[in-house]
Length: 240
Image (cartoon, rainbow, N blue to C red; front, top):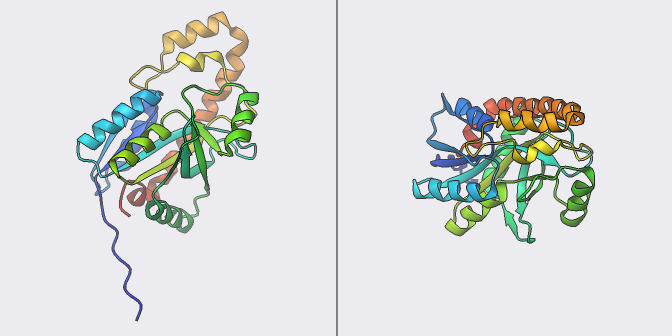
């Protein structure tokens, strides 16, 4: 007789985001869930992501999740596509593998709920890749599907502590999209938009207004896709 499947274990999970809007979505998903979790925002900074990860580990979290939006490196990805990372690569070429059990149960739950996703690697970058040429070069060099600024820092902290780690990201900008210069300084350390700085940047470069409006629409679409993870939140936030 085959052994009965083991029941999923609930762990205290630490969630790291890059933007305050991502943290708000995570908190909303967790609001009525029977899970123990702590959500911290890194304010679009790899260094702060490492600090927030260390704080979560010190607070007793038993697994770490990087949650939010990302930029596409692979040309076939579109706005709103969900990426479940099987690995992370840092700028020096070091690879981190996400937890196989957690990832496997999440993708099974997504399949059961007809949620489309892609599995692949995410590249960590200390800066925003603003133009298609930089994205194409990063894809050619790494083979990673997407790029963000926080996930690899969270992965490194989890690996050092011997904790399970996962990254789930929704695509905002496509590989072919050029991003306005204001994205370099558009986020405050608390992850909220620096509206005054963004408006000043647009006054200096009014030609970037269309690209800014496009990116805002794409970001909202990506955030909306993250909200659609409601039906898989138990596994997403640590029950695996």
